[in-house]
Length: 184
Ligand SMILES: [Zn+2]
Image (cartoon, rainbow, N blue to C red; front, side, top):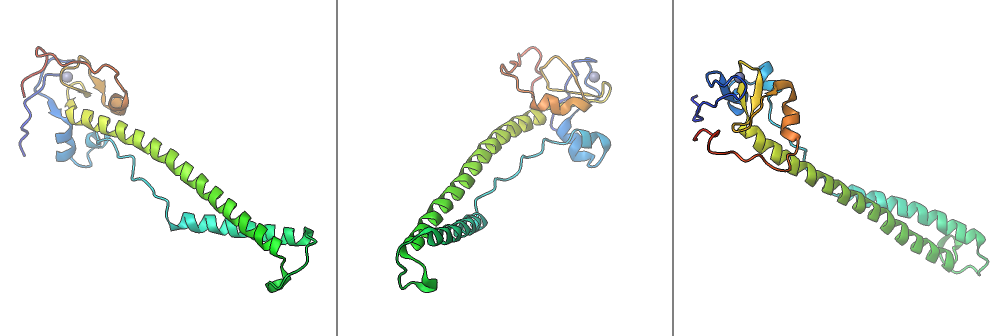
C-alpha cells in the first residue's frame, strides 16, 4: 500500500527520508514493537445506563426498610388492632408504606446522582480522547531519531512519551505557519 502523505521533514535531523505517518506504521506492521508503542489512543469506553437492576435493588432496600419500620411501628404502637392480615395495625402499615416510598426514592436518587457524575467524567474523557486521536492522526515517526513529531512543531518527542504528547493539553495550539508546513 502506498501512502498518499508527502514526506515530512523531521525537526530534529532535518531529513525526511526516514519519516512515516504513525497511522501508516500501525496499519502496516500490526503487532510490531514500534506499532504497539505507537498505538492510537484507547477509547474511554461506553456509557453505562441505569437498568432494571438498579430499580430492583432500590425496591429491595425499600421493602426491607419498610418491613423493619412496620414491625417497629407495630411493636411500639398502642392503637387498637384492625382486621388486617397478621393482626397488623393500620398505622404500622401506613408507616411501612411511607418508609418504602422514602427509601426507594432516596436510594434511586443516589444512583441517578452517581450516574450523572460518572456521565460528566466520561464526557470529559471522550473529549480528551477525541483531541488525542486527532493529534495522533497528524503524528509522524522518524526512524533515525526514534521519535514522533507533529509536522510544523519544532520538537521531536521520544516514542516512549507519545501518550504524554497526545494528552498534554496545549491551551494555545501552535499555529502552523506556511514556512514550516509542507504542502499536502
Ligand atoms: Zn529525525
